[in-house]
Every structure is written in C-alpha cells, then in structure tokens.
Image (tube, rainbow, N blue to C red; front, side):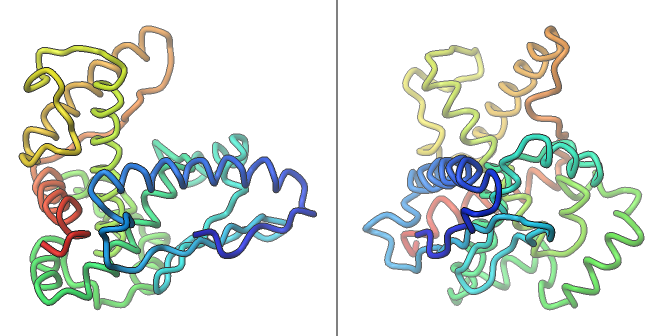
Length: 256
C-alpha cells in the first residue's frame, strides 16, 4: 500500500518511516476487524505516500485514495512541539493515520447512493468552501461553544474534518476497549465474558463501556502524574455522531 517512500538521505528518515509503517499496520488491522481492505472488501485500498521533512514541513492529507503522511511526526520532540503550538490535547502517529484514513473512508462511502444525504444531515454540507473554512478556523479559532457539538476544535472547522475527527475517536475508543479485553482485564461494565468490541452492534453500549474504561485509566495515569490517556469529553451531540459513524464503518466495507 505504500507507493512512495521517504527520502532516506534525510536524517532519521528510516527510523521515523519504520514507526510510521507500524502505526499504519496497526490502524489497518483495526479497520480489518470491520472488513475494510480485506479480500472480501470490493472497494479501493488506500495508497500511502510516506514523506520525510527536510527544511519544509510536509502537509498531511488525503486526495482520491492517496494518503500523505509526514514520517517526521514519528519524532516525539517534533510531534510534541507541534501539539503544543496548536494547543492540541493529543497528537500521535496512530492518531494521524486514523484521521487521514478516515478521509479515505468518507471518499469510499461517498460513492454510495445512500450515504451523502445521511452524512449531511448529521455533519453538515461538505460542499462549503474547504480552504476558506480552514483559513477562518486558524484565524478566528473555534466557536465558543464548540464542545457542545464537536469532539475537538479542529472538528469544528469543516464537515470533512468533523467526520475525520469523529471517525478517529470511534477507532480510538473501540481499540482501547479491545485492548482492555485482550489484556485480560475485567470490569463491571463489560457486557459478558469474551465480549468483542469490534463485533458489538450496539454503538451506545460500546461507547458506554469504552468511556468508562478510559475514565478509569485516566485516574490511574493521574496517580503517576501522567497526562490522561484520553483527554476528551463527549457531549450528547458527539455521541450521536459516533453512533452514526459506527453504523457506517461497521458495515460500509461490506456494502450493507
């Protein structure tokens, strides 16, 4: 799936690329649990352009099935400096992968006859001017009440970014719950022994279990003076978007 490799003459490009590929494989394996990009999935696969940064930052994004990723973001010092500059509570390579692949999933789903009207009802009209929306976001910041409707400030910039951010958070929460179960941990919130979060059809139950797990883990992190694992609060509007997202991502690869 990686079509373009980074320039290995740039310092640290190879170790950064290795970490980036590991994040890519992790996220693709997550999505494969919902049959995305598996042999039974008849749709297009993402193509990755992995680029190293010299003196110029690499803009990450998705266009027509091609996902561009800056491998330099695998450098924890660079990633932290950008996270602080942008006042983001969370920034990792897995997060970048989930976000950019989510744009690709939207593109895949937009080819269906039954998706766009439902999407626009939930997220808004993606046909509004995207460059102008981003310019406004970076110049003016998010709406004062963004927390009531969006999972992050960036999600408030444009419906495309709201989709990608919400999809990322659904993947975060589902994989946290799956990792919790796979580690053999127990909780009163788990529906039953052997519960598989990726097989859960009830999105509200999945979100309930995952959010209770992350609240507990956040408290454990605080006991060691560490940052919260999941530093986000999910409003009811965001939860409704997550439920919508779950329905489409769980069955979209199968054309259901």
